[in-house]
Length: 519
Image 1: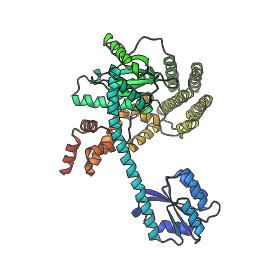
Image 2: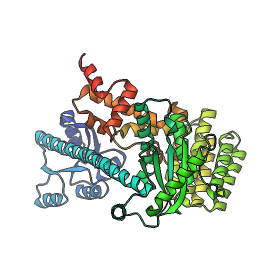
Image 3: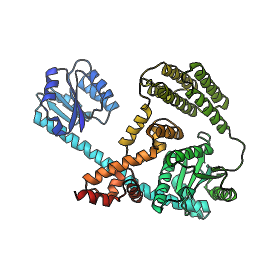
Image 4: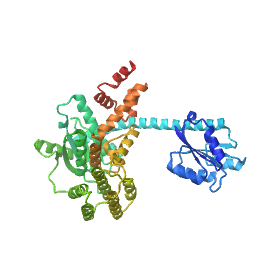
């Protein structure tokens, strides 16, 4: 269903069209009206308008000027023009502006209804075609991933021929001197579980890695011949250090699966030609370490600069969250964080991310401890720091803290409710903890912990549950094939979908549908 906006300076015409049309029969759910072009633009900015019906001759901005403005700002709105003047130049100019239809007053209701209905059908056809293209891209994506995994398997073992190496570099356009490091997840995670559960968990973890690294162009995730997840993570001056990325992944896996995975990091190498060296180093390190040692295994290097800062950040954030009742201590901790950012000369983007993470942590802690709610302070802060400088980000965040402690409005679960709404509205897309966290402008590890604390379950589990709920509804109410349903609920791999469905329902998709159809 779609929304319509009627613009005419004559109230009788506006109300007459609104009252006379069989809106629900022509796929229209809401009808808005405006007395002028200026008021129309206010409605267009605040509401989701799909079809615009506008007069040409109005006081102030004309209908033609309104059309020009709409074409510049909301080009996906379909436009129908009507006028009381039988003027060829008006019609010619309107058609030149690519409006969908042109009527002379008085407008025939049936003809107008047919025109609107036609536009809704065309719009729905475009949406259906876009869905089809997304499904097609997913299929191509699966084939590309399989091809990539075969090549990566050869590269880490040093089996790739010169021609295969050159073809790979030509296709993916990686610089020859890219710094990278192999990270291997050891499959002790799968002890004492069935083969189906093992495969399901393997694909689930791989999906998390794809969201964290591949989708952002910061790494490549694949499964090797020994059913180990192998990551090739890229290092550059603008992004986090690889060890920090690995620690975030470890934190998410702990939150999602309630265990500490064993992760082995190879050496940092230059270029895909040397990738096998990093992989061999990881394997040697794994073989030389005892089971009881650290869960993240890496060569003994000096403590990294970013590791030190992260400890400072964690300490100061903890002080702030646990002292929301003492404004002075809270502000002193924030100033210590600000001084650390300056001392470590961190990039602006990372500083802003840390500021928002601190603000979100304080917001959540304060809301839980005090029961008070805020009035969209987090949203305001996000808008303020998005394009700010380092100093502005500090100032905006300090103002946020001050306003938060003195506010008495807004739900403590605001962030997670927004995240849940995003998940439920995008089940057909590639979704992961990383992707949802990025949408919320939070780090993956922090968002994962926050989601678990609020909902009592991991974000990945919540996504899976919602996908299975939607799949069950589609199996019950449609005749779509399982492969199509898998794509509609966000699964690229039909086997993965079947395993997930059986895990959560105890039945395969086919058995579930057959059982429902018997009643």
